[in-house]
Image (tube, rainbow, N blue to C red; front, top):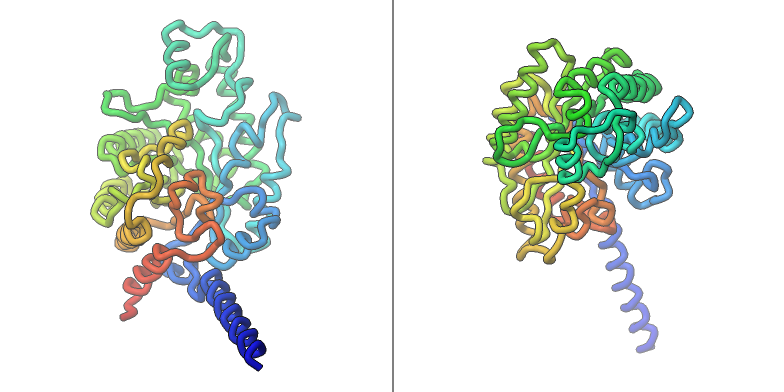
Length: 390
């Protein structure tokens, strides 16, 4: 009898623990419902998710989000790895779009023109680069040496790529990141990054990219996307660039602010200030790649260069990271809600900590087992307060 009671007690405890874990992994409130009167809630997907191999993450994605972005599969290196009309690889991108359509989600395309993850053949040609430009390219990590394309050749390749990719998903992908991260970092006077796009074509490569995208799908929302816009210097560069493009009639339809943040500086005040200034452009604002880094190594940086990511996630987590992450997310979402007339979409850069590009920094609302963190509860509370709940 004693052994039977002990077994029963152990079974009861086991069932209670299992139920607690199940409840933690299955929050009754969904982000997409909590913010449905304010803005869409999106998430960046990887192939295991949009092909539904990662069943646990897929369940979370379907439950919590109503918009999606592709983490990598639409970047030039993956969707158009080889030169020529037969050089495209559409299957992963097709699967991504089909997943979004099947689940009734708002679908974003990322990205058409970027200095990163673009294959070398795009820039190759018969023109020797100026020695100074070649050194600059090497120094800044563009990794390209040798003869390069002419302006006309590179424009033709850009036009072909944009019209082919955007045209394939016309009417299905609702928003495109047309140009990504073209603004310069640092305190200097230079407004634009010294990328190969700029070196070969000139600063009007941005306007040309938007022109080609608009030709391919006139109804798509065409975004300029960049990181570090919480920094006043970079924000001024953004405002100068977009106002210049608008004066020229370039069809920029939205601003993407990535919002790769850290818990030491993310706050209502800093986000409110950034959104207030970006609003002066008179365009919808999309928060495109939201995460908040809790790693000690990333607390002084607002950058998002992939090359610096390892350093940004070193040193373990800051002290009291769960509580500080929750406070940081509460603050930035309070700012998003204040500016909900302009903020139309908030996208997290990953579904859970395990798949985040900054996994060691534990930057998202769900842990590596898809369980909601204290930060999730803090964000939901902000939505309740905005909706008048006590």
